[in-house]
View 1 (cartoon, protein in one colour):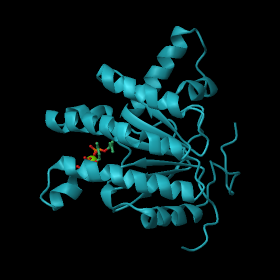
View 2 (tube, rainbow, N blue to C red):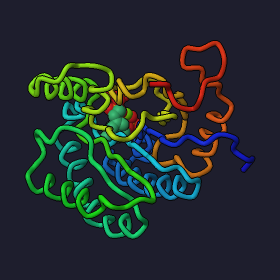
View 3 (tube, rainbow, N blue to C red):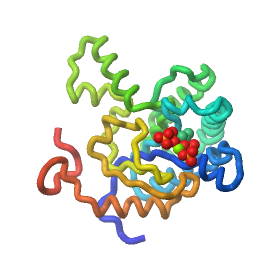
View 4 (spheres, rainbow, N blue to C red):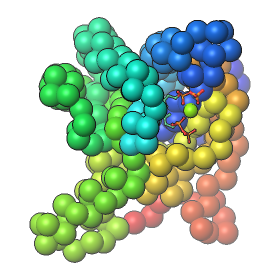
Length: 238
Ligand code: IPE
Ligand code: IPE
Ligand code: MG
């Protein structure tokens, strides 16, 4: 791998293409989602190896409830099972796990599993893994604004930043979407205002450390201007 000049501190990923990966192999779509969990494990390890401290992944959108019931229940079960199976390994590697999204519509048992995982790993410092599940960017903005309004807090960029579900993490530097689709699909609409976008043709189950390095090389070649005429500091000025 060639030396990477600039590394993102926060990568967000729309993990897309599981269904097509399975269909190409004449497998049920859920087989693709299962392989997607393996790809996520690979990418978490690769991010730790490359010193990337924050990874945020889109696992289930507000709109994914519109899929066939069997696929939806399979995805909910997959999250529950994967978390029960992987939690101790995530914890042992110093990963803090957070779940971003509405708990509305999730079974109490799943909510308990999510809350236990967040609590068990909250002091970990090696990496933050934000899993966006039952998440939508519009939900996030409306939920934050409604809470601020209910508390009588004035709505400013700073108060919104603090109330959005990603807080206190900074905005993603790099947004990767796999599966050859070039859209946000309601992911982190506010927080990706100045993220660098990278679209990979790889289907998510095929995305690995080498694919991540291609995204990191593309990122290193970008000039982030934040509205200026010349390159700006790495962080958007307040
Ligand atoms: C992404 O893969 C995972 C979820 C949306 C839950 P898809 O299931 O969207 O896969 P494709 O896009 O149909 O291939
Ligand atoms: C986005 O993928 C959501 C996740 C990856 C969780 P979708 O497959 O749901 O997005 P669209 O429908 O192609 O826009
Ligand atoms: Mg898709």
